[in-house]
Image (cartoon, rainbow, N blue to C red):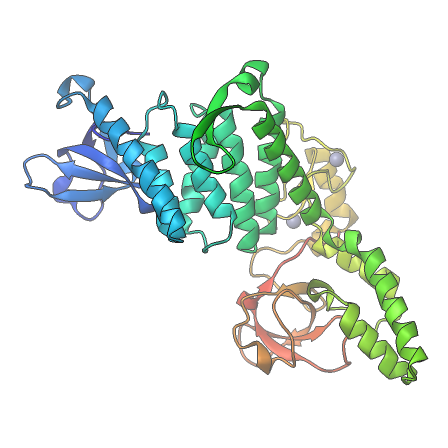
Length: 414
Ligand SMILES: [Zn+2]
Ligand SMILES: [Zn+2]
């Protein structure tokens, strides 16, 4: 990552092509993973460039000693981030922490503190993380020249952000990668001290990395577990609380149907609402929905084996991207065993599919349906690109027309 003061040459611009080949000086990181570059001989002309649009020039061309310049800027950005946090300006705070991190060289004592600050703010849900945030997290996570501690924190934070944006598959992948990095930390990496604020955030104290790795590992595994088995975890307690509520409703004199409906409405968490009163076998329907809601990818979808032939990553079905296998053999076997019929390419929908509503804007029009609910496709709507869907187990014949883009594919049933 270029630091402030680094000399660069502009290259590969598609629009402002007249600047290709120009020399300039990096002023610092800006939003969206870009860098502000001050061009030579252009009287204050600055460009905001992606990293692929400049190359580092030989150090001999640098003007003046750039290291002090960089560290002064880092300290200033870090202090300003603290001020922004106290003022509740969280987006600005995150940007300043990130700026401090990006322009610092690896020897700067507060470098990890800046990264910790940036990633913590992203995980605190003060604002919706941007595409730029996701890019930066990905870049740091994958950069092998970056300390493993920073990279594991990047993966874990990316998991948080992706999950909050509705990408459960992506979140699960990020959490798994964070776990792999934490487990691979060497004794030397675990004893390395980083500076972090004390409890009152008054001063920075040397803190060993070991407990931070442990905390990242614990958080990532817990979050992954909650993504992988959301429904199963809740099935038992949901069923019990509904049964209790049903009894109570009967005891206070409600008619059985009313007692059931109310217990059902009260007891069903939002994400499970799909199961309506018209299911013959509640238990088996819930099992089916548990499977749909489960994010796969930790084990082979055919044999249950945990690891792919190429190491930690399992092979992914190229068509749907939602099924995982330990080997080509398992993939072929599962294709024959039912995945052929269950596999759906992005945007592909067939009658009978169960999908999740997402991004439905005008939700009230749809008979109280809402995003996050699982629906079953009944038939193609008269309008192109839309489907008549009904609640799984819901009122028979009651449908709403939903656009393909408002239907999220779930884990294939086979
Ligand atoms: Zn397998
Ligand atoms: Zn597939």
